[in-house]
Structure formats: structure tokens, C-alpha cells
Image 1: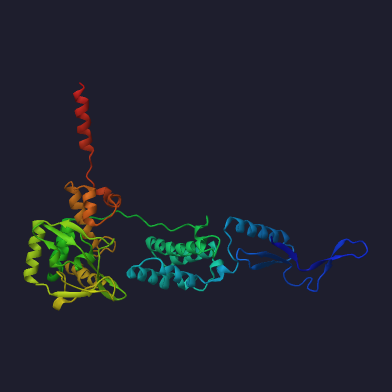
Image 2: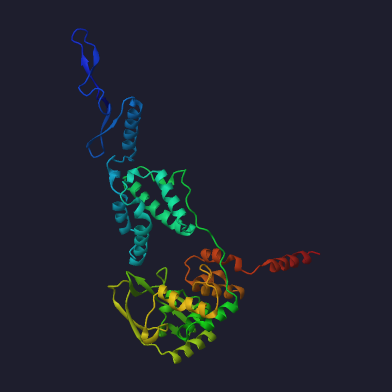
Length: 400
């Protein structure tokens, strides 16, 4: 059991009266007065000092320590002295086996989090400090979605510090912290005229990308990674087996998002456009490592390559090819509404308007949860009010 020591007075037994009295020590009036001494769960003696007139705080601290020891919640006063960056680097190692994902986390830590938190000891980070950081993000004009992503990273790092008993609580979860929230925005569906304009003005070599996106719902990386071997003319389907993505500044092949291949229906019109494209731009074998820059080389015949088999990352494709189509068409590029993902939205809208079920659409889009698909496109699902009215009329009229 620990105890509180008064460093300014020592007990002394009066030789005459045999009573215990307090006698001033040589350090009376100097430095901290009270020292809390206790044994931690590892059997090591620990202490913490308090100034004069803070005896109650010292007693309360000792009660808190002993209670935490009994409940298995004890945190060493020295454990939280580790810097935020040192702990975050260890946290990062356990986040994902995917190097691209870790790379994205690394970029956000380096650019937006470490400049503020890097050298701060974990146990020095208070709700006030977190609020100051959030205020800086807001002052710089970062979007609500981006601020939410950054806040989630910081909170996750501090959660792991709590789990490892480096700190007692996560300051991001204080009641005085207003957690950023992502702003939900309705998906904008392109009119056919906009789709036609982009198809007409995009470079000839990549016109098929518009058709594959709008007619099959593939993501950008999946379109760039589509090969002749993925086109199943007998079954009239496309096998979505890979994507092209950037990992550590190197292009690689990888499984589609979510780590699962899928099958998408292939219409006769889309197949005809693929056939024409292959006649005009015969593919050549392309070799890239699988999954990581040091992964096993994989060779396939890609449909989407530039002159002399040039490969494009998603970012380069956007800047050179995609944005170029908008400039050529004389259209203003809208950041949130006009990315290549708009082609997937057009595909989803087309299928829902023709009565394709949300479950089927989710499978075609590569969504593991049909509920997510429904949340994204619920405003596009055709109203069933008329069907409901007719159903009720049949019942009521049958009774009259």
C-alpha cells in the first residue's frame, strides 16, 4: 500500500512525553512538499510530488493509483512520455498489410498531423490541444471529409495508446471535442448529352474508357487494367480481375478494390466497341509486378495504353486525358461531379431505371454490402407508389 510523505516535516517522539510531534526538516519551505510513494504492478517503487497546500490532491492521487491497480487500469506516469510520432510509427505498422494503404496513411501523417503533434509527449496532449489542431485545419480551408479522415487517424493513434496503457484516456473523445463529420452529398448523374460530349472529345485511344465506365461500371484503375483475356465473348461477361494502381511511386497490378474479382454483364453494344477499338489499337503485352513493386511480374494485353504502350497512373490519366476531354468539349470541370467515377454513377442509374435489383447492381459494382449501394443510389430507385396503389386497389375492389 502506498503512502503520502510530508517532506517538510518528520515525525519525532518526545523523550519525555513519548508523544509524536512534527519537526521541520532541512528542506522545509523548499520545493514540493508532498510525495506520494507507491509500488506499481511490476513491483517498482514510483512517486509523484505535490506542492504545499495540496495534501488533498496527493491523497486523491494515491486513491486513484491504488484503485487503478486493483482494476487492472494502471498507467505508469512515465509511460506517456513517449512522443506522438514514436507511437504513431508503431501504430502504422499494424494498420494494413497493403503497402498502398500504408502509404496513404504515411502521407497524411507527414503532411497534416506530424507538423502539429510530432514531438508532443502522449500524456501532454489535452482536449484543448486537439481543438487547436482542428481549428488550424479549419482555418486552412480543408474540406469536412478530409478533416474527418485526419481526425480519425489521430483518434485511432491515441486509442491504441490507451489500449497499451500509455495514457489513461483519449482526448479526442472528450465531450468538449466536436468531431468533424463527412458531408453527405447527393450523387450527380450525368445527362446523356454530357456523356456524349466527353466520349466525342476524349482522345481516340481512350474513347473506349468512357464506354467501359458507363456501360460496365468499372472503376478507373480497373479500366486501365482491363485486358483482352478479361473479355469473355462466349458468356458475354467481363471478368474484372485486376486494377492498375500506384504503390511507392511504381505502377503495379493488383486485385480490384476490396480484394475480390467479379463478373460484369457485357452488352452487345459494348462488345462491338471493344472489337472496333482492338482493330484500331492492337494491344501489346504489358508486364508489371503484382501488388507491390517487388512482387511477381505479371504480363497481360491491356486495352488502355498510350502510344507505344505507354501506361498511365490514375492521376496522370486525369490530368492529361480526362481533363483534356473537358477542355476540348468546352465544358467546365466540376471537381466532385465530373471525375471518372461519374461513369459508374451513370451505369448504376441506367441499370436501376431498367429494374435491375440493388443486390445485382452491388455485385456488378463490386460492393460487398448491398446496403451501401442502396444508400448511395436510393434517390435513383424508381418509385413504387403506382405499384402499391394498384396492389391495394385489387384487394379493396375485390371486397366490393
